[in-house]
Structure formats: structure tokens, C-alpha cells
Image 1: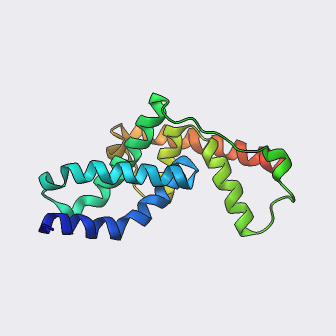
Image 2 (image 1 turned 90 degrees about the horizontal axis):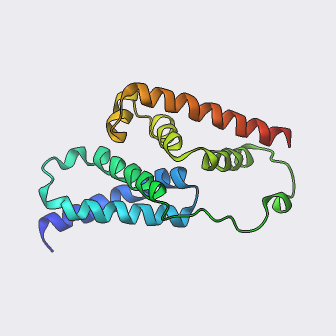
Length: 164
């Protein structure tokens, strides 16, 4: 195994779990998140030998992950299928922190993909407006407007859930 392959393997081992968590927040499905992470690290491996600054890899990996998610959603390759009927599966109204987290994740999955990407990067990954704009290849104003719309959508969805 070459030194570069060993470096990639070490990077993958260190960062794949964190990227899987981000991918889950983007797509709302652990299996799909695993696929996104695999696609992301495959793309990174293909260019690994050309990367000069390995210390800046987290930003590049995050950008590749988000762009892979958005690209796939745009092309319609992935159709979100829901198994079962949520109305009949819910046994009791949510109570406690774990249930609140599940309700929040369910609502986040319903936010449009670009807005969801902004929310995950800004509030989960704790990226600045400028960093998020760079990762998504858009302006800071677009990040701000997408964040505002995404938060409004999320609030509306959570309010609907509260009323149920």
C-alpha cells in the first residue's frame, strides 16, 4: 500500500462517521446516507493524488457530500419512498428529548433539498454564511435567504406536528 493510499485510508477512518451524520441530516435515511458517503469518498479517492493540502480536506469533503446530495436530488435518481402509513404507526404523541429529536429530523426531511443543505451546513456543521456560500457555490445573500426560508418551512412543519 502506498503512502497516499494509507493517508486516504486514515482520513476515511477518521472522518466517515461525521460525514455520515451530516449525510443523514441531508437525506433523512441512514441507508441513503451511507450511499452518499460512499459516493463522496469514492470521488475524493479518485482525486486524492492531486490534492496538495490534505489539512483542508474536511471542507472539500463536506462540499463534495452536499453537491452529491443536491445533484442526485436534481436529477431525480433517488425517489424517497415511505414504508407504511405514518398516521397509523404513531402510538403516542412525542414526549421528551428523544421524541423531539425524531420529530425535528422528520420535519427536516420535508424541507426542500437546497434549503435543507443550508440549514445542515449553517446550524449542524456550524459553518459561517461565507463558508456555506463557498461550499454551495452561491452568494452569501442566497445562503441567508435559503436559511430564512428553510427555517420558516421547518417552523411551519413543526407547528403542524404540534397541532396534531
